[in-house]
Length: 67
Image: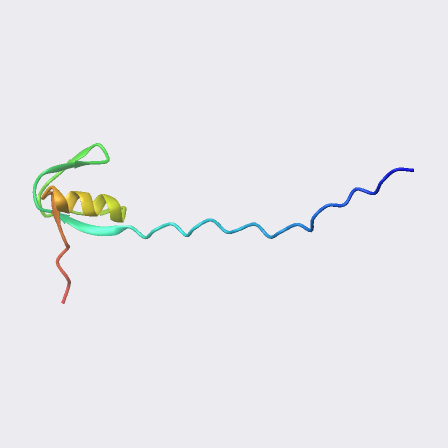
């Protein structure tokens, strides 16, 4: 007589983490972004960790808020 094969009930798959929103920063000096040399004052969108690194090395500042 063959034994019945029992399987565990399927567990729902975990959703992948939501992608982080990009952070808008303003270039404080000339910088190459995505293969293009950008002038100071240009606003770009980057990953939050990249923005943190760019701030640490003095390449960017926070964008000016529109009033």
